Image (tube, rainbow, N blue to C red; front, side, top):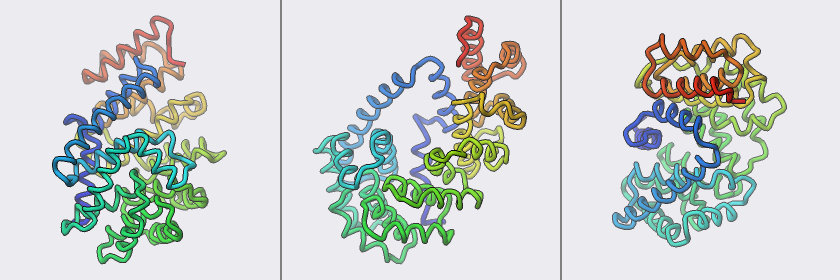
Amino acid sequence: MGRTLGIVAGIVLCWACDGRTWTQKASATESKALLDSPAKMKESRRAKDIEFLHRLVNRVKEQEHVSIPDNASIRETIERMIEDEILGLTAAGRQELVKKTIGQEDYVMLERVFLKQLGSSDPGQQRGAIALLGYPLFALGAADQIKGFVLHSDRMTQYLALKSLVCLDVPGASSLLKDMIRARALLDYELSQAIVALYVSNDKGLDSLAMVLLQMGPGGMTFKSLLPILKKRADYREIVCQVFKSNLFYAPDEEGLPQEQLWKALAEHDLLREIFSAPESFVTDEAIKKKVLMYASTNHNGLYALALLTLEKSGQDLGFFTEMRKDNQPSAEKKRVLDLIVARIQRGERLK
């Protein structure tokens, strides 16, 4: 467990935004979506990412090393900036995309610092470098050095090295990583990132692996990583229905959810987003509608906004929203969502 603390700390820091919890962030994001178009939100997010990354890079230049929080922030920011363009590229193409996205000078500086950290006596610094030189930097020149960590005595270091070699298209790395997956040697978050690495590297056997993991009852983060793979299947909507109704990822309406429950809430959030995208295909199922109604009544788990938007989109009557606004003593953020929905329906502009 101690070996994963640094990585888990990075995950938690990535989910926080100016001190807010993920649940607050999720609800605020969907509330903003009530007013902003996806294109406008994406443009705004990219501008903020570029500015934020530039500040991070300047800090790394001054410090000549990357802290665990900065490591997590660099990864998350670059991944988000390249996610729409990365699929289908070779490792060399992915590297070129990152250079183009963040700038040649900043890329070279980050690569240099992380290569230096490979020789650090600090295990956290070393593991952080191994991870980011693979994804999202795709530093092809680091492959030989990273290979040396595959037989490391530390299991976490072995895993990170394999994952990075997969992202660098090193022959044989995918098979070894899949062996680690099938041996159930990975925790939920580790497994989710292994799936991401295989997906980014265009692995051909992911569909069958995804179905095996689905039958095993995956954790919340693993399920999130499987969604892009499952979406390509003809029975994808049936899978969403079955998993949502199974309560595999049920998230209680509580503040400060423990880590495992928070990961489940993230998976449930993605399922709700799929249901929201085409409610007519889902809410005719009474069990699904009942669960959407349940999440609409919550305040703390970050799921109420998508549930409310789904109900609006599927034709829920105006009285439902006005009564909820009066009866449930909603939080200020939830009341804002309800106010916007009520005003939109009264204007005859219900979401479609």
